[in-house]
Amino acid sequence: MKCKIAQVEGPWEETGYTFKIAGSTEYPIISAFLRKYYYQDEPITQFLGYTESKANDMDDVVKQFLEDSLSLFAVHEETGEVAAVRIAYDSRRKMNLTSTYKSKDNLKVQICKDTLLQMAQESLSTRYAESTYAMGFLSSVATTHRGKGLASEIYVRSLLQFKERGFVMTRNFFSSKITMKIVGRLGYEELSRSYLGELRNGDGGELVFEGADPDFYATLMAKRLDTDTDNCIEKCKNLA
Image 1 (cartoon, rainbow, N blue to C red):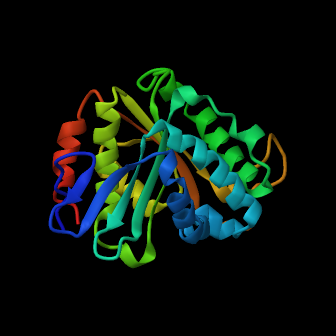
Image 2: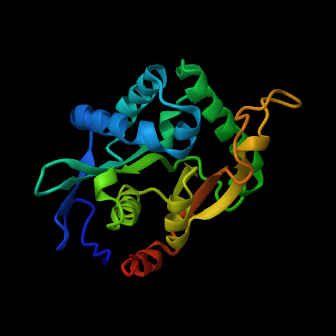
Image 3: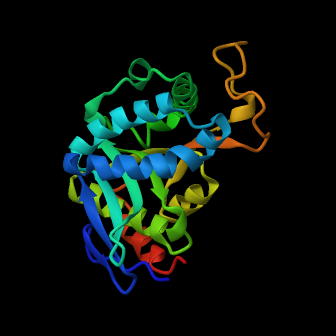
């Protein structure tokens, strides 16, 4: 299936899906979607297990991120159901998620993200040294709509959206190898990698994800939007 791009919002030609910018008014349908899919099947969430406390935490921050109008969702035209969601926010929001989260599991995820940031300091102080950027938070495709290219499409449209809004860089933490592969084709560069089974809380502290598979890892990836974005989008048009 081709990845035909004309604009950020609008129909995805000949596929039966339409993409829209998600803002605060879309919070109820976005929350319902995430509770049904992302909070259940994102790789780290699968490992830790679903809890209402964790979902409530995530809902609280997603609700705030939607205020930035940097998020997208896809609607299946025939059924009217939400098929995919991508949440992003403006880095100038300066949120401290460690102090925001109440769930112990979400705090574990934040330890991983903080570790990845520390590991990437050299890149973040040189090639990716931008104080303002579009920060990707999460993405998810409904189970019944997977395998149709929606993940690739929503990331491509996000890049267009970020560029239109004047951002010159975007960052994202990833734990899904499928998504890592997609964004790698779009020109994202891996800045750091943390194997979850080896991650400890501080020097010599307890294992954060005890029992995680040896090859289970998360990454911090980034992409400049003032260089080869258009070329990467052109390549994406032939992604399945």
